[in-house]
Image (cartoon, rainbow, N blue to C red; front, side, top):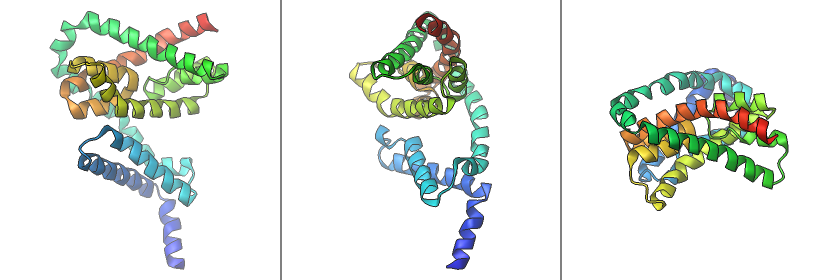
Amino acid sequence: MTNLQQTWVYLSASPLFHLTLTLVAFQGASWLFERGGRSPILNPVLIAVIVITAILSLTGTDYATYFEGAQFVHFLLGPATVSLAVPLYRQWHRVRASALALTASLLTGSLTAILTAVAVAWAAGGTEQILASIAPKSVTAPVAMAISEELGGLPSLTAVLVIVTGILGAMFGPMLLDLAGVKSWSARGLAIGTASHGIGTARALQVNETAGAFAGLAMGLNALATALLLPILWGLLF
């Protein structure tokens, strides 16, 4: 028993252990997702987060220790984002053909995401700091955290809200689009990418290449649009 405890202490302090934990948790979640018929409810990111959080809580491991290993996966987010240019390049003829509609949809979606989030938080009695934290929740995490900090929000809270938004969008976005009767893969991808950034884009890529290409484009352009529009809106509102 003593040897087992010593082994655990050694492993729990090793970055390789937490890297392995992250990969195994996501791989197991992906297997469950496939076995469940790719049900949106079994979103791999959500399941992996729950498993990892439970293990860290049970073992008393703090986030800083965990991130020493998980940072290797975090580093790969950059190349993974850049790789979204591949399906976008393949669908470039579709993008050019719908440039005007794409621009209008993107601006509408970006403004809607900002204003509805702020309105709901304000109606619930949120402080200005909370409103600043929730406003950029539909943008990819690094950009959202930078915007939140600039507006006086809490970047750590923004990061949590971004992840929750992405997971909920990936889980329920396709069902809502089905209910709304949206059939076009480009429109579906654009909507999910605008509302749910990287996590939604990953889900769109699993379903259809065209949807994934437009989702990746929307994710990038929405980050740019929000970074430009939100400070102006914030100045007008507050």
